Amino acid sequence: MERALAVVAAGTGEGKTSVALGLARLLAESGYRVAPFKCGPDYLDARLYEAACDRGARNLDLWLDGPQQVRRNALRAAETGDVLLLEGMMGLFDGDDDGATSTAQILRVLDVPALLVLDGWRASQSLAAIALGCTRMTPRVRILGAVLNRAGGEGHVRAVRRACERVGVPVLAVLPHEPAWRIPERRLGLQTERLEAVRTIAAAIAATLRDQLDLDGLVGRPRRSETAADGGDIPGEAGGSGPLIAMARDEALWFTYPETVEALRAAGARIAFFSPLRDRALPDGTRGLWLSGGYPESHASALAANASLRAQVAEAVASGMPVYAECGGMMWLAEELETAEGCFPMVGALRGRTSIARPRLHLGYRRVRAVCDSVLDRAGDGIRAYEFHYASASLRERPAYEGEGDAGAWRERLVAGFLHRRFFEGDAASCRFVAACAR
Image (tube, rainbow, N blue to C red; front, side, top):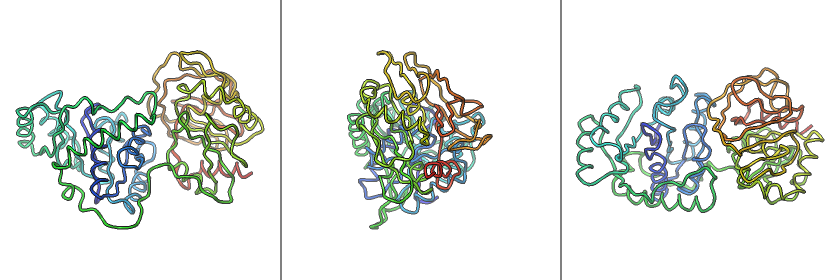
């Protein structure tokens, strides 16, 4: 693929996110329209690009989406964006048990070259062995050169440069060890102050890379055009004549892929965003509810205080309004949310409680089947999803799924669970949900 570049590393924590954010900022400042992508299902890191280049990244995931959908997503962005910038996930060859869903495989599918981030804090000449291994591990993975991150003094940089040149991987740029460039931890979400910190870090890294990287040589010259690039952010509200779906979006519940909004609209729905924290009522004319994941535990007191909205949502669920709720959205629908600060009343539409008082990580790809016909699925449908949460649930509801992951909750007009799913234009699940709302 032309005019595309990936930022990868041999492992997690070596600085690829910082380098990718700085490169995104540099490209934007240099006149390029940037179409950022995050490999894997991580919607949290994807949001960081809003601060770096004013465009949230989209996700590319071979396991969840399949190679055809990955190509489709990338080609769509290539039609409107100057440069596709991909940030790898974990290590370059890490993915499922066979490595078939790794960043390296995504680069092969899309034929995208890469910059390899080497962490100078941990080694010197041995970094050349890592670079050599990354170039030889998988055919058709093209590494153009390395970025030496957290470099030491001049002697250290010279030693790494010489060693890497001997194995054919030139060091194209060097970033010093700068503690102030550490990306703030994300456990509590993307607060405004955190995005401001990311913006400052990205600008500083961009300034350091500016005189070191030949952008024309890496991705070609910027294209001068008045055509706006297709954004990676969640699309805004739009009019139409289809059923109105109220979608949660605020600091408590906001984990929604932009492709989900596009899929629902393509199926004929209108989308109205609402805040579970601040809005006292659902948007007028709501015919369906879409509740995303998020950090309800960080806003439990404020969610509990919004009694009027909680009561209206409980009544809507009881009356049979179509509902889909993922992770944090399911936690909001339960009777109670237990945190380290105590128990807080939630909507009460689902019987039972969820808890994050004793956090336990649940992380990984999941393969499940729909137990019953629902507003999304047919009984027996195979579903690929993933879990990433620290909470637990004790719900007295029929399961929505059977298989490897969370069983979730099912009612004739409701599907909820800790599982996160991907939806795209024309898929059966989103079309079925909109049709249920229309009825």
